[in-house]
Length: 333
Image 1 (cartoon, rainbow, N blue to C red):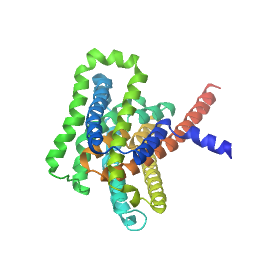
Image 2 (cartoon, rainbow, N blue to C red):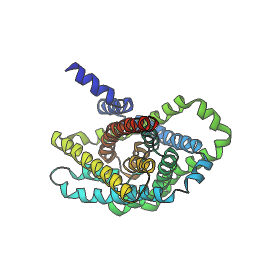
Image 3 (cartoon, one colour):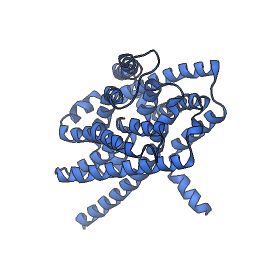
Image 4 (cartoon, rainbow, N blue to C red):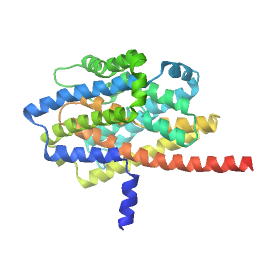
């Protein structure tokens, strides 16, 4: 039995463990009063820094070269911003029984988010896929998501916050996410080299920024009493829904890309970019779009889906890499 737990622990992303510990900390020591205001200000700075670094990392030349593979990117965008939202709407039939109203809204919000960047590229590389296409597709997905996700949320979710209309929310997202990203692009000629040399440090800043936002979101939720709404049957139902969503999209991207005649390397990029949802973009965006205590339950489905997608896609990437090695050895012999 200890070996089982040890193997399971090794398969869990350390960042997810940090997220869980952050939730535990927020549950027992939530930020209140003046401390909550301080955490709110720190969240704003952390999110701006996060997207500034995203902008500084992206090479404009790589982005322009990647535009040539428009069919591949079109498939990934269709899955991310059309198929996923459609599946999220269909999940509503499970809302009264399997999911409560707020958890269902969290699942639907998860379906509206852009793809991940780092894990999509990493898994595509491991599986011997088209890495250049994955870089461009995942990055473009995040840029488009800055506007597409709020628009979809306005259409499918109640995103109004007290004293702010939808236009104000979009402006808030543009100022907090897009403007820092553009700032990073403008500063790239002077800082790109430093960022490449200090990759570990910038990764820590990325993840630390997300942890700050998660702590702030769950602190508000704990103060607002969210844990009373999350029962064990609801949690099991949420895990089941996440698993069904991931399985459906993996099957759709695999079958669809094959039927459309894409090469294997391109199919791998489509599968990994199309099936992901970005925690790094989703958590900050939720803190802008949704009011107070609601944020905690809104990001919980995303956090669970994030770990699930990492575990499943890591297994797929390793299997396809092993098969590619066998095929390569067979050709040589």
